[in-house]
Image 1 (tube, rainbow, N blue to C red):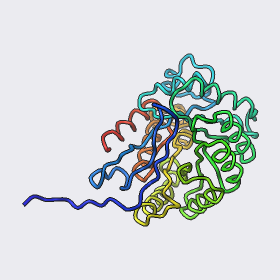
Image 2: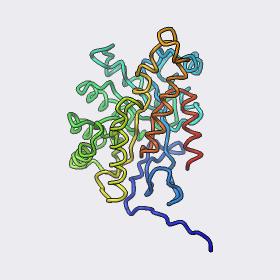
Image 3: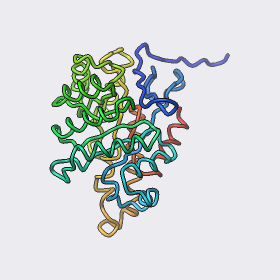
Length: 313
Protein backbone atom coordinates (compact mmCIF):
# COMPACT_ATOMS: atom_id res chain seq x y z
CA UNK A 1 0.00 0.00 0.00
CA UNK A 2 1.53 3.30 -1.08
CA UNK A 3 1.97 6.15 1.35
CA UNK A 4 0.15 9.37 0.54
CA UNK A 5 1.44 12.24 2.67
CA UNK A 6 -1.12 14.64 4.09
CA UNK A 7 -0.64 18.20 2.92
CA UNK A 8 -1.50 21.37 4.79
CA UNK A 9 -2.01 24.43 2.61
CA UNK A 10 -3.77 27.20 4.53
CA UNK A 11 -6.92 29.15 3.75
CA UNK A 12 -5.02 32.33 4.56
CA UNK A 13 -2.70 33.69 1.88
CA UNK A 14 0.07 36.27 1.77
CA UNK A 15 -0.71 39.24 -0.45
CA UNK A 16 1.13 39.27 -3.78
CA UNK A 17 2.79 42.68 -4.24
CA UNK A 18 4.32 43.74 -7.55
CA UNK A 19 7.41 45.94 -7.70
CA UNK A 20 8.76 47.55 -10.85
CA UNK A 21 7.21 47.63 -14.28
CA UNK A 22 7.29 45.73 -17.55
CA UNK A 23 9.35 42.60 -18.12
CA UNK A 24 11.58 43.34 -15.12
CA UNK A 25 8.72 43.56 -12.60
CA UNK A 26 8.81 41.10 -9.71
CA UNK A 27 6.16 39.76 -7.35
CA UNK A 28 6.80 39.11 -3.67
CA UNK A 29 4.46 37.10 -1.48
CA UNK A 30 1.45 35.16 -2.73
CA UNK A 31 2.01 31.83 -0.96
CA UNK A 32 -0.43 29.95 1.26
CA UNK A 33 2.10 27.63 2.93
CA UNK A 34 4.87 28.05 5.47
CA UNK A 35 8.30 29.06 4.11
CA UNK A 36 9.65 26.54 1.59
CA UNK A 37 6.89 23.99 2.39
CA UNK A 38 6.62 23.05 -1.26
CA UNK A 39 5.46 19.57 -0.23
CA UNK A 40 2.21 21.19 0.99
CA UNK A 41 1.54 23.40 -2.04
CA UNK A 42 3.54 25.04 -4.84
CA UNK A 43 5.19 28.36 -4.07
CA UNK A 44 4.31 30.52 -7.04
CA UNK A 45 6.66 33.40 -6.24
CA UNK A 46 10.04 32.41 -4.83
CA UNK A 47 11.63 34.76 -2.28
CA UNK A 48 13.49 37.67 -3.86
CA UNK A 49 16.92 39.21 -3.28
CA UNK A 50 17.58 42.93 -3.32
CA UNK A 51 21.12 44.33 -3.60
CA UNK A 52 21.97 47.29 -1.39
CA UNK A 53 23.50 50.30 -3.14
CA UNK A 54 24.51 52.89 -0.56
CA UNK A 55 25.48 56.46 -1.27
CA UNK A 56 28.45 55.62 0.97
CA UNK A 57 29.40 52.54 -1.06
CA UNK A 58 32.70 54.18 -1.95
CA UNK A 59 33.72 53.66 1.69
CA UNK A 60 33.11 49.90 1.63
CA UNK A 61 36.43 48.15 2.20
CA UNK A 62 35.73 44.44 1.57
CA UNK A 63 38.14 43.46 -1.25
CA UNK A 64 35.64 41.41 -3.27
CA UNK A 65 33.04 44.17 -3.09
CA UNK A 66 35.57 46.78 -4.18
CA UNK A 67 36.67 44.54 -7.03
CA UNK A 68 33.08 43.97 -8.16
CA UNK A 69 32.36 47.71 -8.26
CA UNK A 70 35.76 48.74 -9.67
CA UNK A 71 35.46 51.89 -11.73
CA UNK A 72 32.10 52.93 -10.24
CA UNK A 73 31.92 56.52 -9.07
CA UNK A 74 28.32 57.69 -8.92
CA UNK A 75 25.37 55.99 -7.26
CA UNK A 76 24.00 55.28 -10.73
CA UNK A 77 27.28 53.55 -11.63
CA UNK A 78 26.99 51.33 -8.56
CA UNK A 79 23.33 50.55 -9.22
CA UNK A 80 23.95 49.68 -12.86
CA UNK A 81 26.69 47.29 -11.80
CA UNK A 82 24.60 45.89 -8.93
CA UNK A 83 21.79 44.79 -11.23
CA UNK A 84 24.28 42.56 -13.07
CA UNK A 85 25.11 40.72 -9.83
CA UNK A 86 24.10 37.06 -10.24
CA UNK A 87 21.03 36.45 -8.10
CA UNK A 88 19.85 40.07 -7.92
CA UNK A 89 16.11 40.65 -8.33
CA UNK A 90 15.92 44.33 -7.40
CA UNK A 91 18.08 47.26 -6.32
CA UNK A 92 17.79 48.93 -2.92
CA UNK A 93 19.08 52.51 -2.71
CA UNK A 94 20.30 53.34 0.79
CA UNK A 95 20.64 57.07 1.48
CA UNK A 96 22.78 56.83 4.59
CA UNK A 97 24.53 60.15 4.04
CA UNK A 98 21.27 62.10 4.37
CA UNK A 99 21.54 61.70 8.16
CA UNK A 100 21.63 65.16 9.79
CA UNK A 101 24.00 63.71 12.38
CA UNK A 102 26.32 62.51 9.62
CA UNK A 103 27.09 64.02 6.23
CA UNK A 104 23.65 65.70 6.17
CA UNK A 105 23.41 65.41 2.40
CA UNK A 106 20.54 67.42 1.01
CA UNK A 107 17.24 65.93 -0.11
CA UNK A 108 17.78 67.50 -3.52
CA UNK A 109 21.10 65.68 -3.99
CA UNK A 110 19.56 62.37 -2.95
CA UNK A 111 16.61 62.82 -5.29
CA UNK A 112 18.98 63.59 -8.15
CA UNK A 113 20.82 60.33 -7.43
CA UNK A 114 17.55 58.40 -7.32
CA UNK A 115 16.48 59.83 -10.69
CA UNK A 116 19.86 59.00 -12.23
CA UNK A 117 19.60 55.43 -10.95
CA UNK A 118 16.06 55.06 -12.30
CA UNK A 119 17.31 56.11 -15.73
CA UNK A 120 20.29 53.74 -15.58
CA UNK A 121 18.68 50.48 -14.39
CA UNK A 122 15.78 48.32 -15.47
CA UNK A 123 15.26 46.22 -12.33
CA UNK A 124 12.76 47.32 -9.65
CA UNK A 125 13.93 49.85 -7.08
CA UNK A 126 13.52 50.01 -3.31
CA UNK A 127 14.61 52.96 -1.17
CA UNK A 128 15.93 53.10 2.38
CA UNK A 129 16.55 56.32 4.28
CA UNK A 130 18.86 57.44 7.07
CA UNK A 131 16.60 56.60 10.07
CA UNK A 132 16.02 60.26 10.88
CA UNK A 133 12.23 60.64 11.02
CA UNK A 134 12.01 64.23 9.81
CA UNK A 135 14.63 63.90 7.05
CA UNK A 136 13.28 60.58 5.83
CA UNK A 137 9.75 61.93 5.63
CA UNK A 138 10.82 64.66 3.23
CA UNK A 139 13.22 62.41 1.34
CA UNK A 140 10.70 59.62 0.78
CA UNK A 141 8.05 62.02 -0.46
CA UNK A 142 10.39 63.71 -2.95
CA UNK A 143 11.79 60.43 -4.27
CA UNK A 144 8.31 58.93 -4.61
CA UNK A 145 7.31 61.97 -6.64
CA UNK A 146 10.44 61.95 -8.80
CA UNK A 147 10.09 58.22 -9.57
CA UNK A 148 6.34 58.27 -10.11
CA UNK A 149 5.34 55.48 -12.48
CA UNK A 150 8.33 53.29 -11.54
CA UNK A 151 6.34 51.33 -8.91
CA UNK A 152 9.10 51.52 -6.31
CA UNK A 153 9.11 50.30 -2.71
CA UNK A 154 9.87 52.89 -0.03
CA UNK A 155 11.22 51.58 3.29
CA UNK A 156 9.81 52.63 5.61
CA UNK A 157 6.78 54.17 7.27
CA UNK A 158 6.96 54.05 11.05
CA UNK A 159 4.44 54.86 13.76
CA UNK A 160 5.94 58.35 14.07
CA UNK A 161 5.61 59.27 10.38
CA UNK A 162 3.17 56.81 8.82
CA UNK A 163 0.68 59.54 7.94
CA UNK A 164 3.22 61.62 6.05
CA UNK A 165 4.95 58.69 4.35
CA UNK A 166 1.80 56.69 3.67
CA UNK A 167 -0.10 59.63 2.25
CA UNK A 168 2.69 60.87 -0.01
CA UNK A 169 4.32 57.62 -1.09
CA UNK A 170 1.31 55.36 -1.58
CA UNK A 171 -1.66 57.67 -2.04
CA UNK A 172 -0.22 60.69 -3.85
CA UNK A 173 2.34 58.92 -6.03
CA UNK A 174 1.12 55.32 -6.22
CA UNK A 175 4.27 53.66 -4.86
CA UNK A 176 4.57 50.71 -2.47
CA UNK A 177 5.29 51.47 1.17
CA UNK A 178 7.02 49.45 3.86
CA UNK A 179 5.60 49.34 7.39
CA UNK A 180 8.54 49.18 9.82
CA UNK A 181 8.24 47.98 13.41
CA UNK A 182 10.60 46.43 15.94
CA UNK A 183 10.03 42.74 16.65
CA UNK A 184 6.47 42.94 17.95
CA UNK A 185 3.50 41.32 16.23
CA UNK A 186 1.03 43.71 17.86
CA UNK A 187 2.93 46.79 16.69
CA UNK A 188 3.21 45.31 13.20
CA UNK A 189 -0.52 44.68 13.03
CA UNK A 190 -1.38 48.08 14.46
CA UNK A 191 0.78 49.92 11.92
CA UNK A 192 -0.78 48.00 9.03
CA UNK A 193 -4.24 48.90 10.34
CA UNK A 194 -3.25 52.56 10.61
CA UNK A 195 -1.92 52.61 7.05
CA UNK A 196 -5.10 50.98 5.79
CA UNK A 197 -7.02 53.57 7.78
CA UNK A 198 -5.40 56.19 5.53
CA UNK A 199 -6.93 54.20 2.63
CA UNK A 200 -3.55 52.78 1.59
CA UNK A 201 -4.50 49.54 -0.23
CA UNK A 202 -3.32 46.29 1.36
CA UNK A 203 -1.65 45.42 -1.94
CA UNK A 204 0.58 48.49 -1.60
CA UNK A 205 1.95 47.55 1.84
CA UNK A 206 4.88 45.32 2.74
CA UNK A 207 6.28 44.80 6.23
CA UNK A 208 9.69 45.14 7.81
CA UNK A 209 8.91 43.53 11.16
CA UNK A 210 12.46 43.97 12.41
CA UNK A 211 15.70 42.13 11.87
CA UNK A 212 19.12 41.78 13.45
CA UNK A 213 22.34 39.96 12.77
CA UNK A 214 22.28 36.39 14.04
CA UNK A 215 23.61 36.26 17.57
CA UNK A 216 22.44 39.80 18.30
CA UNK A 217 18.99 39.27 19.74
CA UNK A 218 17.89 37.35 16.68
CA UNK A 219 15.63 35.15 18.80
CA UNK A 220 13.21 38.09 18.98
CA UNK A 221 13.23 38.34 15.19
CA UNK A 222 12.63 34.61 14.81
CA UNK A 223 9.73 34.66 17.26
CA UNK A 224 8.12 37.66 15.54
CA UNK A 225 8.46 36.18 12.05
CA UNK A 226 6.95 32.90 13.22
CA UNK A 227 4.00 34.55 14.97
CA UNK A 228 3.27 36.94 12.09
CA UNK A 229 3.37 34.26 9.43
CA UNK A 230 1.29 31.80 11.49
CA UNK A 231 -1.37 34.44 12.16
CA UNK A 232 -1.49 35.38 8.48
CA UNK A 233 -1.87 31.81 7.24
CA UNK A 234 -3.47 29.74 10.00
CA UNK A 235 -5.73 32.49 11.36
CA UNK A 236 -6.31 34.28 8.03
CA UNK A 237 -5.49 37.60 9.72
CA UNK A 238 -5.81 40.10 6.85
CA UNK A 239 -3.92 42.72 8.84
CA UNK A 240 -0.79 40.54 8.84
CA UNK A 241 -0.93 39.11 5.31
CA UNK A 242 1.44 41.66 3.82
CA UNK A 243 4.72 40.21 2.48
CA UNK A 244 7.84 40.73 4.59
CA UNK A 245 11.07 42.38 3.44
CA UNK A 246 14.15 41.98 5.65
CA UNK A 247 17.01 44.50 5.20
CA UNK A 248 19.83 42.15 6.16
CA UNK A 249 22.98 43.95 5.05
CA UNK A 250 22.93 47.11 7.22
CA UNK A 251 22.83 44.97 10.38
CA UNK A 252 25.22 42.22 9.38
CA UNK A 253 27.94 44.52 8.06
CA UNK A 254 28.00 46.63 11.24
CA UNK A 255 28.54 43.97 13.93
CA UNK A 256 31.94 43.23 15.44
CA UNK A 257 32.42 39.98 13.53
CA UNK A 258 32.25 41.98 10.31
CA UNK A 259 34.13 45.14 11.31
CA UNK A 260 36.94 43.77 13.51
CA UNK A 261 40.13 43.74 11.43
CA UNK A 262 42.34 40.69 11.12
CA UNK A 263 45.01 42.63 13.05
CA UNK A 264 42.62 43.19 15.94
CA UNK A 265 41.16 39.66 15.90
CA UNK A 266 43.59 37.33 14.12
CA UNK A 267 42.03 34.27 15.73
CA UNK A 268 38.79 34.99 13.84
CA UNK A 269 40.33 34.59 10.40
CA UNK A 270 39.44 36.54 7.25
CA UNK A 271 37.40 39.66 7.97
CA UNK A 272 35.59 39.50 4.63
CA UNK A 273 34.71 35.82 5.05
CA UNK A 274 33.33 36.55 8.52
CA UNK A 275 31.07 39.28 7.10
CA UNK A 276 29.88 37.01 4.30
CA UNK A 277 29.07 34.29 6.83
CA UNK A 278 27.07 36.74 8.96
CA UNK A 279 25.14 37.97 5.95
CA UNK A 280 24.37 34.47 4.64
CA UNK A 281 23.34 33.10 8.04
CA UNK A 282 21.07 36.06 8.75
CA UNK A 283 19.46 36.04 5.29
CA UNK A 284 18.82 32.30 5.47
CA UNK A 285 17.29 32.65 8.94
CA UNK A 286 14.98 35.42 7.74
CA UNK A 287 13.86 33.48 4.69
CA UNK A 288 13.15 30.27 6.60
CA UNK A 289 11.30 32.34 9.20
CA UNK A 290 8.94 33.91 6.69
CA UNK A 291 10.60 36.82 4.88
CA UNK A 292 9.55 37.13 1.24
CA UNK A 293 12.59 39.20 0.28
CA UNK A 294 15.99 40.01 1.76
CA UNK A 295 18.31 42.93 1.04
CA UNK A 296 21.99 42.00 0.82
CA UNK A 297 25.38 43.44 -0.19
CA UNK A 298 28.19 40.99 -0.97
CA UNK A 299 28.24 39.17 -4.35
CA UNK A 300 29.31 35.88 -2.73
CA UNK A 301 26.55 36.12 -0.12
CA UNK A 302 23.95 36.92 -2.78
CA UNK A 303 25.07 33.95 -4.89
CA UNK A 304 24.89 31.63 -1.89
CA UNK A 305 21.38 32.72 -0.93
CA UNK A 306 20.24 32.49 -4.55
CA UNK A 307 21.39 28.85 -4.59
CA UNK A 308 19.71 28.31 -1.20
CA UNK A 309 16.38 29.58 -2.55
CA UNK A 310 16.64 27.69 -5.83
CA UNK A 311 17.29 24.36 -4.12
CA UNK A 312 14.40 24.77 -1.66
CA UNK A 313 11.64 26.10 -3.91
